Image (cartoon, rainbow, N blue to C red; front, side):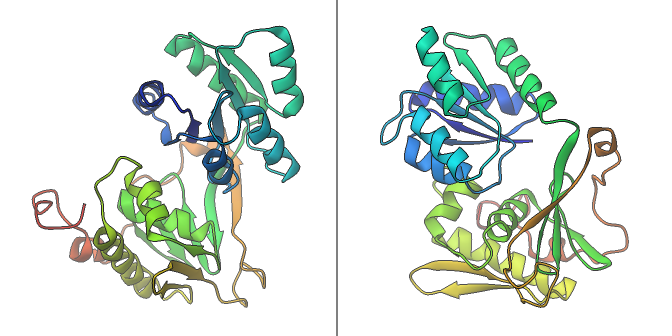
Length: 274
């Protein structure tokens, strides 16, 4: 499960990220309301943890804009303001739950479990664009009957690009989403992993392409005759929680180890992109 944390207090944001990662959640962190709104609208997240008092746009405005835009991702508001009128404002804006500071890790995790239960047993496990399908559980990328396992960074890169087909995605945004806001990664790291991912697409025989737009970034191009339809938009297939345990978790059997030829090893990190 992927969670977006929108919190301007850097120390609290880091603590939240640590708690969530320790409990098996994937986490992205941003520090202002406008960025949080944009990232939450991407459709990549299962839950948004949203502070109320934020720079650029407060949490009430963020959740209201998301709901007007048709984004139904569950939102947990997080604030030191515990007055009843504030809670009513937050819930009426479209938030699903409200938690006041200070709180314990156990309380936070209980709220998250409650939010996911309210969503029912159906969860998104695959992201599809064009003739490609990305398994969000096993990190396998498939085209037709052929599939290959991706490294974590390859998977993260593919997920961002496939969720935004036809859109220009800057290198700066990819660094934030794949390596993290505090990362020291540079453009050459992005270029290296785009190259790795292109080799995987070629191996699979996909008609999708990662186009380079000079001084702008990259665009994930989808053939309009493929499964994504003329609009090229991503789609997600779902299965129940009971079926999640049956998802593949290892490399695909019988697939040539393209990853071994292209992916930097742990020992080579000193000279390879990170």
